Length: 136
Image 1 (cartoon, rainbow, N blue to C red):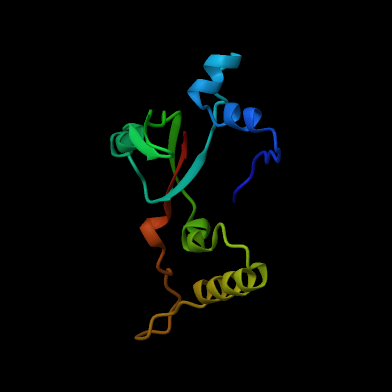
Image 2 (cartoon, rainbow, N blue to C red):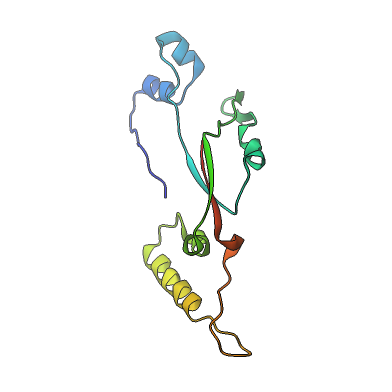
């Protein structure tokens, strides 16, 4: 899911201030607008595996501009077999197809049976059902 504030403006100074351009902030005062993101990663990730998110990056926007890396605020691993199985459907906007695929996945999971014995068996769950929610 993506959500947040959308600012539509033709006021270029306001726009440049919101995206944190240093010359605009220096001339008119103020500070960069903090941005917060939530990621949902497949698998259980230990905090040390997320360290690369904090590494500085460089962005080309009219020249090379160094940017600070993100600050990992929280990282929480949890198990949710249904969400892990349907993980690839997140963030899609083709609602009808997503609902059809979700229904088919749930039906297949409920109908898993051993070929040898015909007995119900546990369905495959990606990453063992583990997910990690990260706030940056």
